[in-house]
Image (cartoon, rainbow, N blue to C red):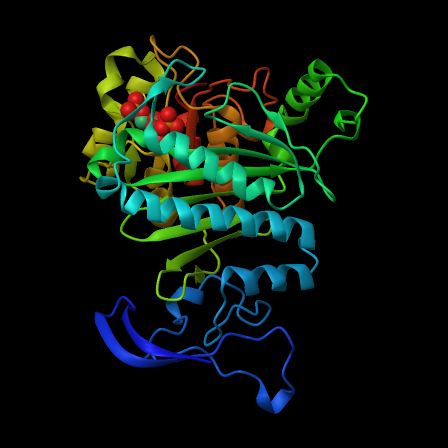
Length: 401
Ligand SMILES: O=P(O)(O)OC[C@H]1O[C@](O)(COP(=O)(O)O)[C@@H](O)[C@@H]1O
């Protein structure tokens, strides 16, 4: 039992109140001792509205029960949605995100803004936090002893992790997405995906360095449809970890008071429609005609009951995608005369976000293909991405036909 004073914004204004916090202990207390629900002032329980989507009776994530990421993972294990190995990998990713959140928060006062003075394999200048976040992710994952291959957007090639003693999962990640926003303190994020290793790509001690590398590359070049887990962590006004283990999409908000990710979005479903589009229209002149016609049509209010679509663009995929997932709408980064294949990476950005979109009832498309069906030909392959509300993505695709 933890006692303390908490400043807590439950969306109905600021509260300060002495708190009694009951976190379910490992041993299941007998029935009459069962912990009562978490409450600050009786209003921070998961309200009706927040659990509206979830099938109240079936889902344990109903009103009155507190779930941290840890207890949610235990519940998934109990329901055999995931096994304990995957739970450990997800916990290590959450730990990395907590560390990166505090680094991002304090970047301006800990000399972590600005360039690192090096470029990544795509020739993009790396930010200091790109490099630090990459190390934080890799170290947290290595420490689980359950990772076989790590593939980062910031690294030239995937690396084989020595000494993993059980389970050698593949983790692909973009340690800090939207890093062009860092120095201005605007939303950024981390993106990740977890795959099962392919039998034929298991590294064994007889392999020489080249064989190891080839196997690692082959191992990570998998279609997004094979993802076991996908997610992102948004570092913004709040730090929100959103993920899927193939059974819908959930969101956890980081509570720095208790140092835990608290279940805040038990069942995210992207609205089927949404009149918000997130495109960098500065590239309009470089887009193919179909994309131009699509964007022009969104601005033609006569088509939309007298109100045109609204443009919102943060310039950080995680920020724009998170808003799209909650409010509906569409995020798009088309190919253009400069980025002939698009800008975003299939493995580290497009596939994980498309898996989340589909698990939330939306879509992830290149305009002509389902992103999750694409098998990367190169580990840093780029593709166009259009994702969000099902009807909005389908409407866009109609301009490619
Ligand atoms: O500045 P642009 O060309 O609009 O690109 C912004 C897009 O590029 C990204 O920053 C991805 O690039 P990074 O992973 O290198 O940050 C996305 O987060 C964002 O949506």
